[in-house]
Each structure stands twice: as C-alpha cells, then as structure tokens.
Length: 150
Image 1: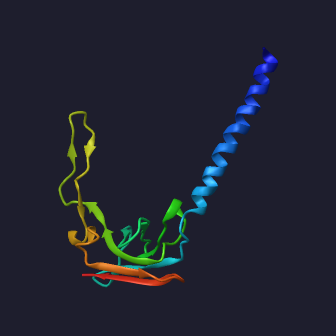
Image 2 (image 1 turned 45 degrees about the horizontal axis):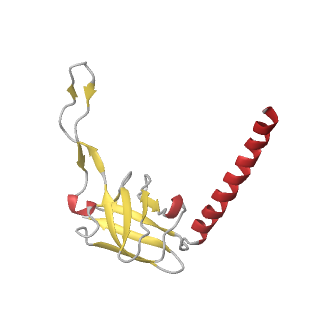
Image 3 (image 1 turned 45 degrees about the vertical axis):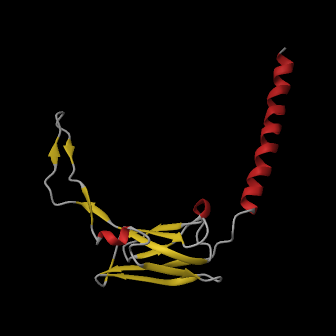
C-alpha cells in the first residue's frame, strides 16, 4: 500500500503539469503583442503624482493602466502586467483621489475614521468617454503621450 501511494504522487504531478503547461502556453500565444507606451500627466501645468491612468480601447478588449510617479510620468502595463499596450485608439481616464478637508472622525471603539476620499482633479477626467481624452498607441509604440489637464 505504501509503494502504491509513493507512485501515485509523482504520477499526479506529471499529469497536472502536462495539463496546465499546454493551456498556459496556448493562452500566452493567443495574446496580442504589446508595444512600449508611456507619457506624462500634468494638472494645471504641474506633474500629477499618484494618479491612475486608464486606457480603454475604442475597439478590442485589452485595456492598459499605470500610476504616475512624482514627475507625472507613467509606463502603461496591460496583459498580465506586461509593460506596454496593444497598438490602437483609446479613450483615457485619469483618476486622482485624496482625503477631503473634513476633520477625521472617531468611531465607538475610539478608532480614527479618516475623512472621505474626494477627487483632486475635475471628476470628468475619471470617466473614459466623458473625459474627452484620447490617445493612439502606434504599431511601434508611443513614448511621448501627454495629458495636460485643466
């Protein structure tokens, strides 16, 4: 009985590895190629730090996103966090949240409740179609995308 269980474990491992590897490879092969896509976000002429940038495809299914650094720069990531974006036209949303001006509260246990989050930039930019922001990622990549929000 012990020998039977010793054989079963390696056999199960081989079967599992055989099934999952082929499917994962097929999935990876079926994904479109991505190209470099990066740029900068400014708000009132100044770099916008810690803003989320979302590229929603006009056609297709592969969105891309990034978070801006202290200089307002971003590098888009898409499929499985792979750097870059699928070439094409995009509607763009930019979201920047911060705590509101309200004083923090305290709950019944004495824990501090932070003020609610509010948008640090006009709300219209948080919606890909209402923002009126668009971008095109070329077949060779786009490294100079720029959004100057007012």
